[in-house]
Image 1: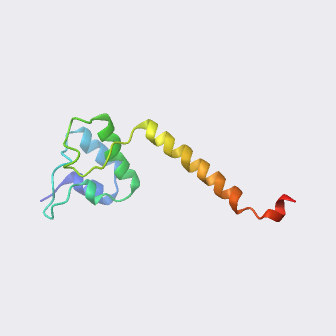
Image 2 (image 1 turned 90 degrees about the horizontal axis):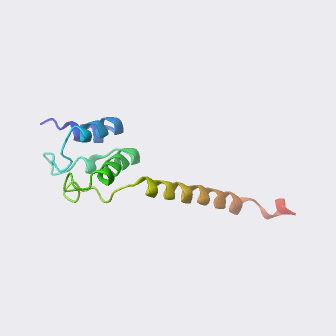
Image 3 (image 1 turned 120 degrees about the vertical axis):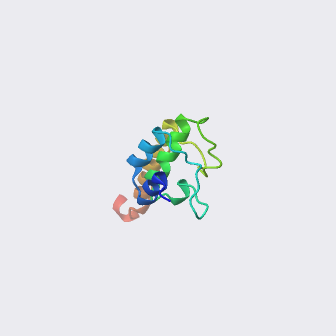
Length: 102
């Protein structure tokens, strides 16, 4: 049985995943091994595609049945990006040897 959403998720094709979700593909459908498309995702970008779609369409599907853990809003992504930048700056400062400051 061919499941296009599962295939797109498995191959890491975030654009195709979004296209299929927008066309009405059901993320709750399970494959022959009992896995949803989200469970097969290859990479963070594909997982985030499902989560972004969930944030914009919370009542469209049973997201718990689809195994999508939580929505991802723009505000959440921006907050995560700020934390990552702050962490990177802190790490850089942290690893600079002390003798360079004297």
